[in-house]
Amino acid sequence: MKEDKALWSGRFKNAPEELMKKFGESISVDWIFYKEDIEGNKAHGKMLNKIGILSDEELVSIIKALEEIQGEIETGEFLPKESLEDVHMNIEHRLIEKIGDLGAKIHTGRSRNDQVLTDYRLYLKKEVKELKMLWAALMETLLKRGVKDVDVIIPGFTHLMHAQPISLGHYWMAYFWKFQRDHQRLKNAYMSIDANPLGAGALAGSTLPLDRQYTMELLGFGKNTENSLDTVSDRDFLLDLQYALSTFMIHSSGLAEDLILWNTQEFNYINLPDGFCTGSSMMPNKKNPDALELTRGKTSGVVTGLFNLMMNLKGLPLGYNRDLQEDKKPVLENLKNVKMVLSVLAQVIEGIEVNKETVRLHLEKGFLLATDVAEYLVMKGVPFRKTHGIVGGLVQYGEETGKDFKDFSMKDFKRFSSAFDEDVYDLLSFENAVNRRNTLGGTAKEQVHYQIKEGWKILQQEKKE
Ligand code: ARG
Image 1 (cartoon, protein in one colour):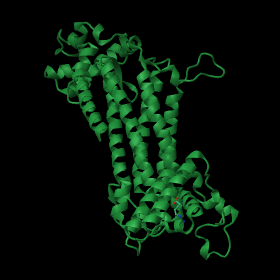
Image 2: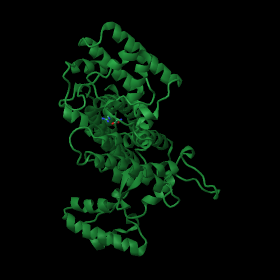
Image 3: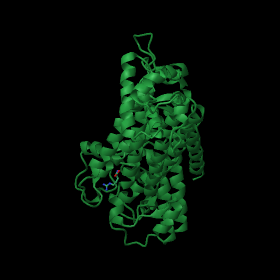
Image 4: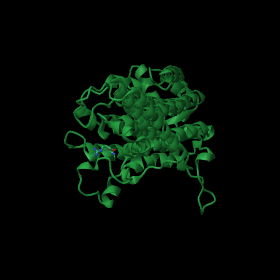
């Protein structure tokens, strides 16, 4: 067979321009699907045999040739050609080269439009399984840090200002739950991915009695797609995946930002592990939090990948359009980056050392116990809105005199409200403040332990699935 001749060239008088070949190729991206393409070819061949289009001997020769092709690819003996456009044409072309006319039977009842989706969906199922394992490992790291740091009290922030004291374990668990929801989104994406498109043909199905149920079973898909026209144009499964990856990255970027701040000289709450920081080419003093900065930075690329795909799909006429060939790069790139971020974050979080002394000093700033004092007055029968004003006055007084609540005399307290009693001093401990927030989902030690217990249960369940 003439090497450069496209398998679709029959109706053409002239060969494609060299520029068109360069412009139209997708082999530089989709060669990554070679295994799935071969798997799809085998299943399609078996089905053609089942419905009487290929004889048993023909099927045996085709399967044998396909396996040889896989070997040739893996040893580097067979390299794809750009002139053959994509992975499908390269493998089919090689099959025909090897077994002649028999190879030319494999594309019966099939189009690249359903073939590319078969490859892509099979490939993504494996990728999502790998992602799920990395995800679970990160969530496990957070659970372990939750246990380790449950007694470390840090200032909790709103508006990046000291608000109320919280357990550091509670902080880690906040990210556990965010990642758990992202993980759920990933599982939803898996369900959209797990449908057999093979048999949809170019757009309308086939005049041949293709057995889609059989290819579905052979390829291990959970179901068949319902409508051939929908099938060849549907890229929702990619949007679902990109969305799950994007929310994960948005969450990760926030976590990275906190850790970058906590690692600064100004905060100095934590030390990041050396192995995930880099130095400066000029300043010998530097240890920069590059792994976390890159996590923050790569978020824009991942979210752009989601938008890229959305823009590609907007307003497309129904059916396959070549625009859809551009659906791979943004997804493959995102998978690569998210897999790295999942591993990097788990290792960074595991390696963090907390500077407990410094954190303790920070707790003294910003009247973190103001809400506790206001709620104390509520329990003495003062309406909350009034207590808010009273404690606001105390804070102002404290700021003017440079004193904290615990430095106030009973007389000081009484000047602001006669409802204050000696027992107010019992409140003024950060441990008490944290552990008294014992509402469901609150920061009290008991609640954090409960969350961790629930988290483990979910994770064990996920691992079984
Ligand atoms: N390489 C193409 C893709 O990735 C294959 C699909 C079909 N091409 C075609 N001209 N109908 O989408």
